[in-house]
Amino acid sequence: MSSTVDGEGAVAAAPPRAEQALQEVLASWNRAAESWDVEALAALYTEDALMFGGRPGLAVGVAGMRGYFGSYVDVLASAHLALVDQYLVELAPEVYLAQGFGVFKFGRVDGGQTGTTMRTTLVIARRDGRWKIRQHHFSSIPDKPPIDG
Image (cartoon, rainbow, N blue to C red; front, side, top):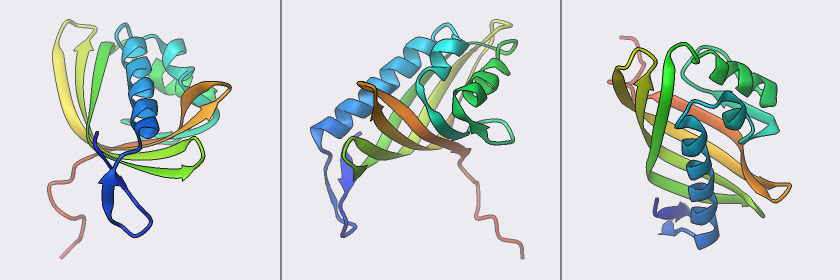
């Protein structure tokens, strides 16, 4: 993580507070995912959070996050996420948009290991003294533009 985009579209050094906030969220996410703790993962999101993750459909709020992460309990034993090439934009005081790539490593319940790299978008906000995820959208990197003919 290294850059922000200012209002003119120019890339500038990321404000230390934005970088620190994103690092804090990432560390908390990885701690919860280390043992695939559904409750701890869901608690990282705001009450009104929105998420497009790796399954069809939109997860909404903490209950939606609990359902989403819970849907992987019989598949995933652990996960680790590294955020790379992130660009940070301050949307409002203590609200940041981070966009770049995420490198996942997954430990499967059956003992197997797998991983993937995805495009990432996170909006993080300070709520009740903690940084939480307000919006989360991860998607596969397309091989080509989705244009027919």
